[in-house]
Image (cartoon, rainbow, N blue to C red; front, side):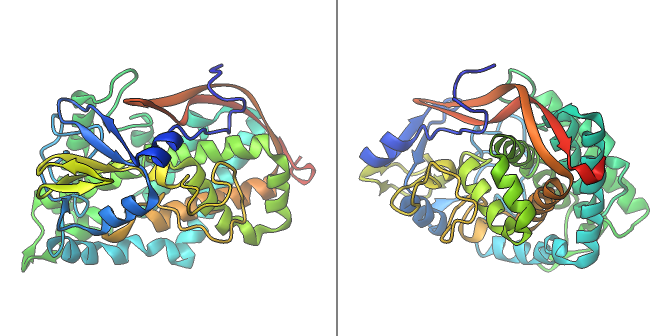
Length: 394
């Protein structure tokens, strides 16, 4: 067991001192350094200023660590700026709002119920691989509107589509995703259906139908953007409720608090540490000079612990009244899949509360990221948990 924290569900804030004293950090990334913005006000201001800090640059460069070496296809609309971004975002928003529909919510509730029933029957499971990865993949079939059986293929890829154990980036593994998406586009071209591939192929932007590469760019973002982040959010939430059984009991007594609980868990755990931008001109942030074409990052994880906005920022307050977190990004690039992710987590919390009495962590291995001077816990490589059923489910 890693002794990085006293409890499995404790996620220390490694940015606190730097955030308070200077407002930024610096990290070297494949000979393309990044200035990390740590304060909430600077993160929000920079996220809004797309004219000065651009997303529509070389594909893969705004991601930290950079994916320039493993990807040439632009992720849409993630790697675009207004006004181009605005048109493509509008094209996609109605599809990604589908989790608001009752039939979608009923279908997801059924998936979550079956998974929780399974882990309760097993008793003890490794949560990352046996629950979080499986739930993320099965839920994604609803978002893409494809058969549930497709989830088994995605589960075989592991928790990250661009990384392997011990490697920051893995071009061979990335090629598996690219090849898979190409095959699905071919299938949709030959036999159009009601899945996202087919809908995109029939969509128009810039006065024309989307190109094959544009469709691929949307799909790469859909697969990669919500994979390890959702898996971390699921796993970390279970770890928290296992070590705070009174909070699970509260969710059981007050299921209406689940929505606020999701927002607070996302704030506290911040499944994605940061995301980059590229300076369009010479400028200044936090009294620090930023050269044109250099990279800055919006450090969501640090901003979400900023004591100037959040009272008791290093504590989980499930019913936090004021919670302007940036766990799903901020500005015009806020997460397109946030509605889906929120529903997955809310459904998980309410299902756990209705089916599980307590959970016990047996052993775990933490997943830590190193960003220059900062070492940040983002989740777990593995965590063994025993699920104890409510008496009524025996």
